[in-house]
Length: 183
Ligand code: IMP
Ligand code: MG
Image 1 (cartoon, rainbow, N blue to C red):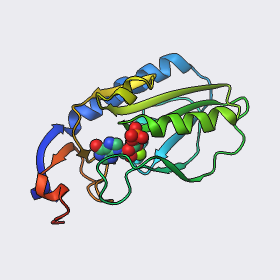
Image 2: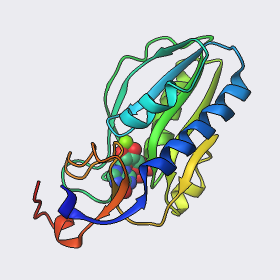
Image 3: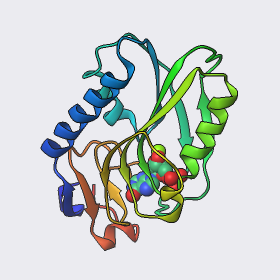
Image 4: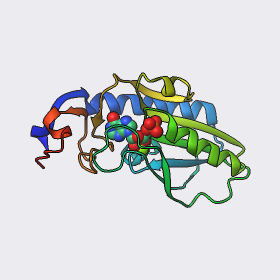
């Protein structure tokens, strides 16, 4: 995997510091209110796992799987909800957690779906944002980092379902993105 990396964009230590800062902001805004955390899988899995261990309030965790970059795609193919266990959210304070906003399509789709489920409040926490028009039109309550418009992997983000376990956020060498993976 290491030899497929082009450049480390955000090293793990910097991610860890930012995750703690985000958790402090979320805690300050929510106080002791019980919250429902909804990570958008699979990409938000690692970010969410780190984030929630810095949150002191009572919480439920509800999983939601959305696919928008199937297989070797490096551009969104349109977002699809693959599975959810969301159910009734009436009276719940929901925090939606995602890895990255590119076109913003995923977050808009999920937000619309969740607002129909009757949550008392709905906030969004996203680790990375690319400088696209769609992303700019999709407001986020808690944002980790702005990154350039390049395809990144690691810390939960994948290419062709690989590289999620890299601790840093990195770019891949062009030949890897052309489909010739060495793993
Ligand atoms: P959007 O719907 O275009 O905003 O894309 C959001 C989803 O696409 C994210 O939740 C990621 O799963 C995936 N995605 C977007 N950009 C990247 C990337 O650079 N690397 C890996 N996955 C990405
Ligand atoms: Mg995702």
